[in-house]
Length: 298
Image 1 (tube, rainbow, N blue to C red):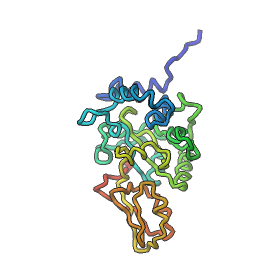
Image 2 (cartoon, helix red, strand yellow):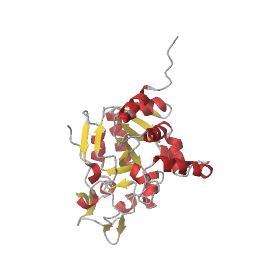
Image 3 (cartoon, helix red, strand yellow):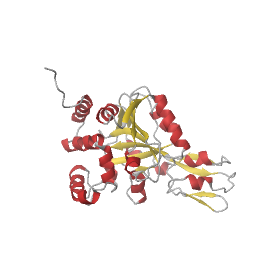
Image 4 (tube, one colour):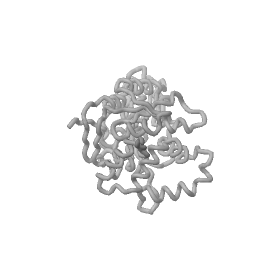
């Protein structure tokens, strides 16, 4: 009789890694499993876009209180459990093209995120592309949908095994092509971390301000996105054409004869500088905004 495997290999791999993490609980694992197994339901309920969101709000609230870390006031802290860091296109390219395991220490300097102190990217050449759950949940989504890059193991295998209808494996070259196409569309690259996803980097999302749940949360005062560690600076060659203002997804640019950038609102994504016909904008390091996501190879 053929052996029936009720638990997929990628789920077993996820569980093996989870058991090796100090402080990673069964609830953390269940949270990560639900998030990875049913991302479209998770995101649509979390953003209030699901038809049943209102009816299920008490259940979702109970699960949030059970699974998420708490604020000092005792409330579920979504921002501390799910966090994205804006990255310029060059950094995003690096994240999908590395061929060795990466280890980064003390990411508290980069991201205010409890479990992201030690980023370990295992098998980074394993990449999958997933239809964006945020876009899929939107009534009139931006296209294309297949723009979320799941990087490394066990995440790439998990999403492909559990959602073969929405995900597929791709090469680093294909991933770079997706990044560059999204960059041309004016969308922002975010490297995402989540404590339930083993507390480390697992995805690059290419985000539009109209569909992205994390950007909506950011605008509503929930700090789910961290700056790239850079800030855009306007040079003397600015003509005041307003191209950067139209391109900025964070409303960080105003124009009064010339462009003026609000450093507190700027996330350092670099979208504006590639839209400037006068080449008058540059990204500069901003230590007060955190450190860039630099990728030292071990």
